[in-house]
Image (cartoon, rainbow, N blue to C red):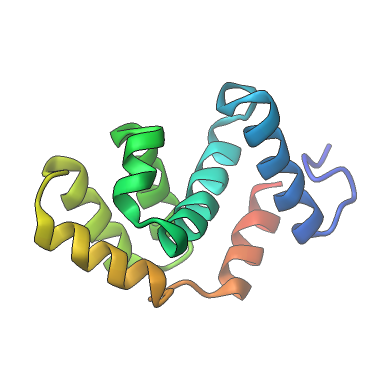
Length: 120
């Protein structure tokens, strides 16, 4: 059975985000966690920067977001996030990651939709 339960991709993503925010990340499976962290990285970086994301979720969440970025074709972003996870206090990497995220470099909504549909 599809994990999307007949929902649209947007409705599924919204449900995953709501579950993560309201019930906690541990209520999500690995794929849903990646989806959650990628989306939250994009949202929180716009408002407060990646350092805020790191303070809230930590390095494992950053690696999960990096894997999701890779899966949707944002390879440059994924590489920078992996490097940042190894050196989280490197100001140049924080700046580069923030620039890539706020510009949505490599983030294609159609590829995210395809990734979500392919996982269900």
